[in-house]
Amino acid sequence: MAVVGAWFVVSAWVLNPMHSSTYLWTAIILGGLVLIGSLWELSDKAYRRWVYYPQALFGLYLGLSPFFYTFSRFAWATAVTVVLGAVILALGLWQAIVRPSDTSTKPDAPHHRAAS
Image 1: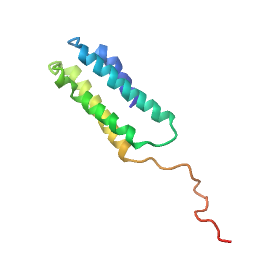
Image 2: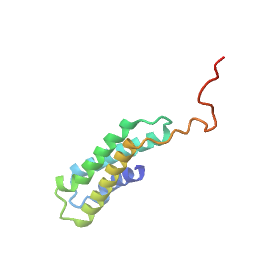
Image 3: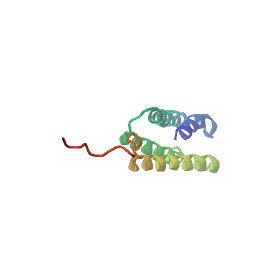
């Protein structure tokens, strides 16, 4: 998701066929938030489910942005934006729903303490 977030920041200049300042700032801010959130989760040891829900919403908004900013007539820009927005949405929801396996416990560690 960090790579896709970074792409949206870059796409503010690459995929802005009508030179809309609204799309420019939307792509920079939301792409930057996805990038920052992804990098934060990569560096954090604790699993925080709530971080992925806003990222999924950012992906939904970015995927719909060609229709909000009326550049859907540019097929290549629309396709890339919709597909990558859907990727962020799907990955955000997947990471929020599926909890990673807990690797902090050793598999051979005893589960109960012996009673004295």
